[in-house]
Length: 482
Image (cartoon, rainbow, N blue to C red; front, side, top):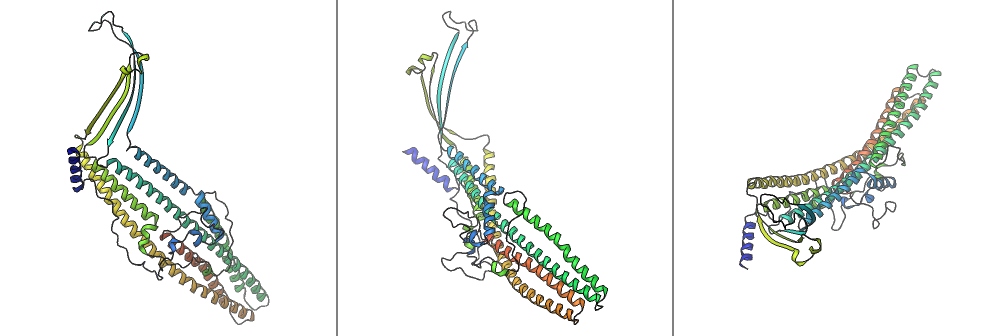
């Protein structure tokens, strides 16, 4: 009882000195009450944008199928899943280290000794003999100071950090697939606008040639109409090249070889009708729990904290219990007899004396690593806040830009029709027609780009809020049902 009391007193004293490290506490981070640029408020019990599943955010059936395929086949996601299995095995190794270590050995030897050595043997002593030996050894480190348990805690934290890193990979993949798909749709729209413009300019060239034959316009007008048509036609192969490359990129994200992507090309669909739902972003504090990269950074910190505690514990002599049970006999027939039994029990304290200075420096090394991971966690939180604020600003800016661009396109389309009518009646000049046509063409191309940017801003906001890691399971609504 006295020894137990002394051991407890020593442990308490060492713990009071901070040798084993304190229990982990989440570092303080400065969080604003609301995200910068957030206009709506999240009502109690209401989902934020980041809480929605990806199939609730991306309602296009084609895009839903692409994301589902990518989550199943993408190589980065599969690599991340394999890393999780690796770290799960590491946890098993760490847990085994806390258990008693048992080993077994058996051997049989036949040997001859010299009969005329330095000490002559009696003539009756046999010079050839057998030796049969079997033994089971056991050793167990009593984890009084928590060295082994802290290593297991660190391994578990590494596993959880790896699982959250896998979820981060899934979020990145969902974002990349959606971004690539929206970019492909924007290129489709630009190609459709260009082909429509080519058709309009072909009709205008035909009209100009007819007027030239009647002597109403000069040959210069015909040449400029031909040049204007050729300029639009030249954009078609370049857009087709961009579409092919975008399809190849999207197929690689799906884990497939480069090929065409089957989709429905949207022609003159009101862009605002297909934007992601305008759901509030939620509270900044939710990022600490929702974003996998923030959770992974925190579990990296937990692992570093546990390793620091373990290395501190290694400065104290380790109590080890040992034991063995075996049998040794010169004759195999007597090997299992009671007279051949052997056993031993022992206990000891082991501490490094020669390398003690190295151990103290190891504490400094792991203390510095723990400080680095804490700062990295705080930096990750700060970056998450910036990403959300940037995405909110982009969503608001591009949505406003898109509405104004729609008004401009409608006005320019009306203006071009009126100029064409006036030109046919001889009231407008050729340059007015060219100017109106070029302005409309540029505005429609820009509208497709702004449309893509507005959709991408929604994708970035969803990603910044930590949405998109979910997988379609049997208990979840299927994409087609949504």
